[in-house]
Image (cartoon, rainbow, N blue to C red; front, side, top):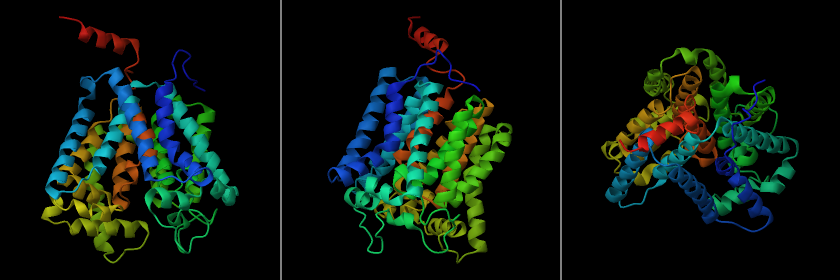
Amino acid sequence: MQKFADKERIDYPVLAITLFSVLYNGILAYINHNIMPLSVSHVVLCEAVIMIASVAYILKKGIYEDDLPIFLYLLFTLIMTLYVTVLNRIAFIDQFRNVLALFCFAGIGSWTTARTVRLAFSIACFLVLLFLVCEIVDVTLYVDLFHPAEYFENTRGIKQMSFNNTGLFANALGFEGRFSFGLIDHRSSSIFLEQVSLANFCGVVAIYLLSFWPRLGRLEKTLCVATIVLILLTNNTRTMLIFSVVSIVGYFIFPKIPKLFDLLLMPLLILVGFFVHFMKPNEVGDNFTGRVGLTITKMLDLDFNAVLGLSVSRTVEFADSGYVYLIYGTTIFGLIVFWLFICLYPAGTTAAQRRCGHSLSLFIFLNMMIGGTAIFSMKIAGLLWLLVGFMRFSENPRTSEAHLANIRSSRAPG
């Protein structure tokens, strides 16, 4: 068993920021139901605190040449945000907020230690697993703690449905015929309060295991694997079941695949989507082929105004179609730059880095085919981009004496 290095420190500010990004909705839901009603402003405040703390941490460390790719991507997104806002006369900052979160967590991840990343994932998995077991064993206790339906009504304006007297988020109830292992009578949500984020958390933990597996101890492996398995058995997520199976095979084949292969992945998935759609053009149900067909149908409906970001007011219609959402919100050029960033930003020198990079691309591009904005949620994006930021510098940590010596020498007068 490989334990934490004795001399490796725990970066407590990074640990606190990351765990708060995972837990803040659960904390707010508890307060909302048991202490005082909350509103959307409390959610915005929490996200703002997370981002401000992250930016302050990054600025304290300094911006260097290594940070240029992610800084330029943030700048590009800001320019596109101003572009669509001015031309549409509608303030649309959603994608800038998404990329800012990406910038924050990849930034703090690039400066943190392996021990901090491992501790963040271990604590997050433990808490997710704890409340998932609570939800499975005693859903009444789970609702007494969080009452998700009430929380989303107060903070997101999502009205509680008349048919839903469980207190759970209505979308987590599923429906007859929905894919299920039958372990519980709804789609599990755990600390995230809604089912989509829990499903995507499963994918993020799988990417973490691919990246860190040889460095983890037996207890850490058991905790992470148990969390993934229980989520798959209770969340009824077809996409993450596919992703998890591919990840097992990918552990062995990803190191053999060149990094630049990721550039082909998004076009290939879209081509497969078109093939599936034309084979079953009338498939529109809540199944894998139906969700793919929905995305392709919306892509075929794109017009000139949409491609140039002149119909941003329609973006809300495409929360379940990630590619179309990005085009409407940031133009076709925004989608292209996003594609290039996802493929090229992660490092690809070592086997672990290639596992991380390939699985990240598959996770993002597969999700965008059957979903929309969920991959940008801070509840998921925090851990994911902390990991990606760390892995980018994992072979030459920015906290190492050698790296710090290079920085000092670059600052020294010639």
